[in-house]
Length: 482
Image (cartoon, rainbow, N blue to C red):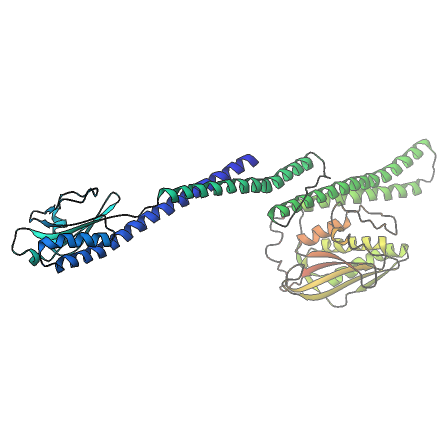
């Protein structure tokens, strides 16, 4: 590729040199011809004026020949034109090549008889003919005329040689520049090809060396960012599979163990064993439901019953239902939602969002979980669900807080934070991923922030419902029953 690019650039440079050279020569020739015509007309008028000033025909010839030498003319002749348009001149000077007679056409005769200069181009010559005052020769069948010839200035052999030499130098320089630029352009492309090939083959640690700040450098940075995300995604996927395997294996092991104990008669407290088996089966059921719900949300196969819902009331009901679980961990649940705040959402899914956020807060809180519902007005450039009035549902804990580098990733399906929970995890670990998918599907947004007094605050934002019973336009346009 590098060789082809260099050859192409050299060819373009050669074509440009030839094109420019031909253009320069062509325009120079056109300019020289135009200049020769204009100069010939002026000098022809001067020669005619000299001829008219001569006292007689015999003395006019030598006078205009001397004028021709002064004007640097190739040929200056004095002669006569018959009524039929035939021009007759005296013997031309040696070496001039001027003919002794010329026959004009009807239009040319009319031009000459009108006293206008007649200029024609013949090869590298400009020939001019003009009538002298007819009274100068008296009454005769012929009228006096003056003929001049001058060369058209052209580019000589020496300038042409210099032009060829400069063209060769420019071509050589173009070749060197083409070689350098081809390496400059193709080397990053080659490196990008090698890096993406290594990534495609499974080597996610491959990185492309980046230099400069041009488009190729930005391409390299994009490839490296992609590789970093893929590497992080693979690590997260492995961690996720390990976590899911552990979550599946733990209840299954317990169920299998108690089933064997009952089979061998090692336990007689069937009521206690039944309770334990039911708890483990419920844990499996929650895990499977979360996986299925997340898959349906990502596949847009989840059905929502949108309506005008009081977010404050929903948050209060969920907090009351979660309070016993929090009490088991010596946690206090506080609700800050005095005024009704209406949004367009599915009440059950909104309750699921708040419940998942409280489950997550329960794992990290030290003593208190706060559920708050408020309103805010967002500007057009602010991150979230767009400008206008919004409802903000937040769940905060007073735990150690999530590291800043983890905050942008806590809603990713496979992401595992570096912070260890205070309490053992009893859920599937997919709660925050489901919160994001549900919020987005119902037209809202979600964000994780560091708490003002420590801990973490997760906010879900929905536009306020202005018209009762009217879902926002364009939202959930293709619901499919799950």
